[in-house]
Length: 439
Ligand code: PLP
Image (tube, rainbow, N blue to C red; front, top):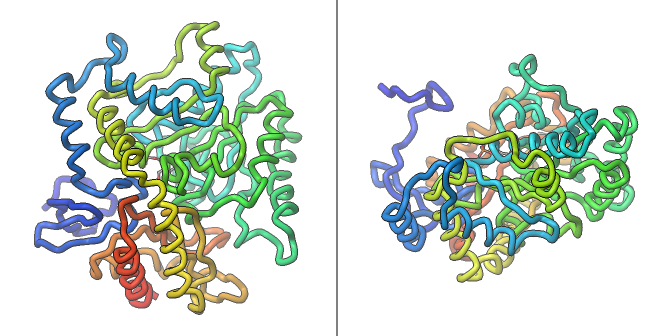
């Protein structure tokens, strides 16, 4: 009997005892291709020698030092590296232990920024429907996944949700990308008008939507329109790249493909590649300066923030990605993966859409391709496909349809950046068998 409260109380999980490259190994010796990086985490795969060596070195130096008393070389070096590679304008890094913590910190940083600047009336956070920003109460309040929010609603701070940018589901059949981008962005403009621009703190969005809708990239110029609206009203733009960032879409930051700058950006999963729990907020110089010239401190903190072991792991992961030019492989293998998915599922009667960027891809499953009608959520296709995939020796990340029927089930793929063409072929073959078994 287990004494762990697992995510699902009834589940009997295999016991992971090893990991090599893109595979995980359980106690019976069975191997699983990690085609989702867990949840888009394991960007370098498992057991990487350079990361293991970096962790040993850090452990031999200092494992933990409270950030109220000390800084460490590991945390300073990681911050330096992140800012060297960051979009222009981002000047400082706040290190935490995961994605939800990063989003919480970004929301509070945005609020305190306006308090420091003498605009305490700004109190509204606007985010989008069909999004996910984490499970802690502030991040959950920002997120627009109704199924995740529903039972905790009485505990959530007031937030406002506007339309997502989701071409497959919401772009009109004859509507151009430019018109759709403008229409999706207008939903933010309307909400700002309703609340009063001078009362809004921030707009929060995933640059490429991850788990809730399944690797949904924005249409061209959508974020340019969003940036214009934010600028017009002095609203901060927080981009949540916890899942889609750190190389996953083929550029270090997904926002590089949008031609805009955020005021704050969160990263996590691919930052440490799963070798240690870590997340970060990258913040603009204007935000840092408001704190530095105002109260002199950010009124927030966690015991494990800036943890040197986590920073050392993340630094090693990022160094390997750069040294081995793995972003080029993300782009090349991303195209191969897209082509293989299209060859396999392009004419499948229950696959409505194949989408994504880099090694961040998804197929959307629908009951009817013509009408895009989703499957009945009570069928729990996601659980069935996941189980069938695990039986095939494949980890993928399937998610169920929404309770409001606004989208279908999807299967998310996010393999490690070291994946080869042969392995991509094996992933798609196994996925095809799992989908057939699960449907
Ligand atoms: N933001 C996004 C976009 C995510 O995808 C996730 C996790 O899936 C989070 C925030 C929360 O991150 P964590 O699970 O590390 O708290």
